[in-house]
Length: 206
Length: 206
Image 1 (tube, rainbow over the protein chains, first blue to last red):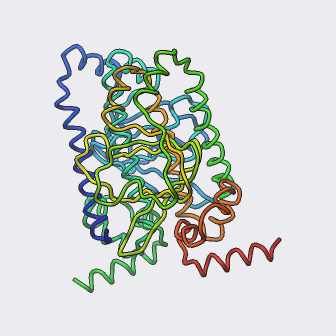
Image 2: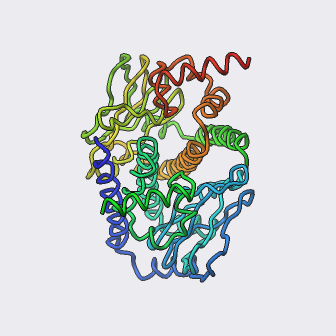
Image 3: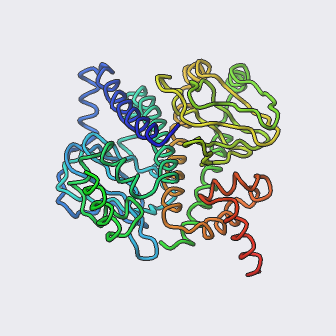
């Protein structure tokens, strides 16, 4: 594997995750099942700046992003460390939902006006009860997400900030215009000044 | 959150993952169900140095470590980048098992003599068919693993190599003696010479 291959691998994964959603589409939900999902979830609009989850709170809700951008970050010694941006069609599993014994260590913030389909934990369990094969889909989707995080982690370990930025230009070009620079810098693991320099260098290279 | 809190959070998570295994113990498997698991899995011994999975191969097997240590690493531009060590009671999900359309990007290597309980993909599916609630357990366990990776990633982003080493002394002291120094260095994101210096500095601090 070389660094370019990692980029390709991540793109392939992204396509594969999409294909899991297709699998969901091809899942042939009956009208009754679709009605169940509609009953158990709700679509809500959130203004830019809304914090969906704070450090210390107990997560109770999972989300599917219909429109907008949500940032996941940790606050470490007063400094925000962004680790992920969720965009359209991404789902956000509050991993600690499961038995709610542990409070969140991170924040979830809408960094654009968002339209989210959301479901609380009780309804999630009820959904699995009504449509057990949905739980299989969730397991598959979690396996994909885990693989994505592992590769993201490996890639972060092996790349310079400039390489990370170039990689982002290929894998998630939408983020470059949608995300404030200081958040993008934190995601790349650099100070905003360094990000500025990286952008200038890349622009100079054409 | 401060850096110490991250360490505490990871320890708490580790305990929580253990409690999921307890949940598994308290799962009240019937004799028939235990027999199914026995039929569908097998215990195998591997010599130190055995590579269980290579980049480019299609993963077909999941493992539970009964004894030994397995290293997960990427080979990037010829350099090994270790991202995880699996020890006793850890399970290794070959995340790309699910529909086997994507080959592995990483390696799995026994770095001690290992005793593993293993199950191939077909048997895994058969197990879910025979005991559907096992799939729920897998979903819960995957949620935990995902949360662990997210925190590991966040922690890697915010820590210096020396802080990472100190953190390891608290969260996984067993690794420090069991893992060769060059692999430990790669896991901490430094060259072996730097790891040497870090150890000397910490020893001098008492």
